[in-house]
Length: 309
Image (cartoon, rainbow, N blue to C red; front, top):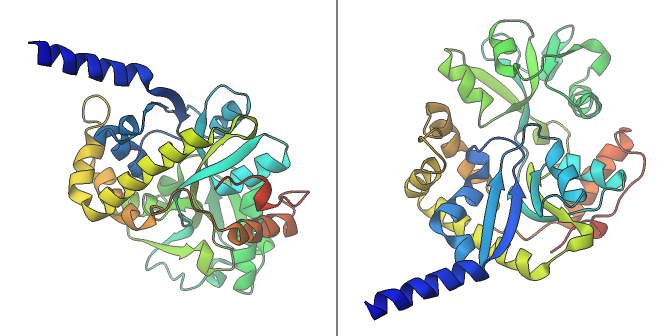
């Protein structure tokens, strides 16, 4: 009885001493967040002395703003968004990478005769939001294929990307993730084809990153956070089926155990950053230069000013 009581006291003491960290995701939990969820489910954050509270946002643009305002400790966001936020003087620093490659594509339906992006001349391209980045990205991709953005019609279709493509409302979509929308189309009986941004003239970038408030950098906490992420990523890559079981068990009602998530999980495994803390500064500067050259940002930030390694 005394041993049981002593063990309970030790466990209670460890939990009481764990550092509370608030983390807001960029959107509802999905396979892109695999390392975070696996680390949580495996107790890897707790093993590092961290008590991570994970929150889902109603709007993917708000998490970095809430970190900048001191409302959350960490947030998941996108490298393109981070660079623009930094230029707007939000006190944000990239501290981790979740997805180390672009996921965005220009997507069409296969067998519709679109062999290259040049075949979209005179066609309609749907997008979800963020017109400035759409113009820069799609415009560059089209230019590489001999046409301009003036040769297509851009239509804001909201979040109905795959549905707009499947129903013929548009001929192509930009913003569809290669690991999600492609499967959504397949499940509806359509076969998609993606033109990958990094193969069509866009500098490669990290799709999903974690940011902290630049004025409140806690290097010890971040070291522990990244160590847990690294261990979770290693486990996920080495044991994808077991990691999937951990992932789908997160939350209430097994709501993550869906056909779409199962398919996306397999495609996302190769995208996870094996070294979450590491960052290629030159790669960040190259993408910032792309944004600057295309008028998306008005000043050119240096990666050394907003990346913590």
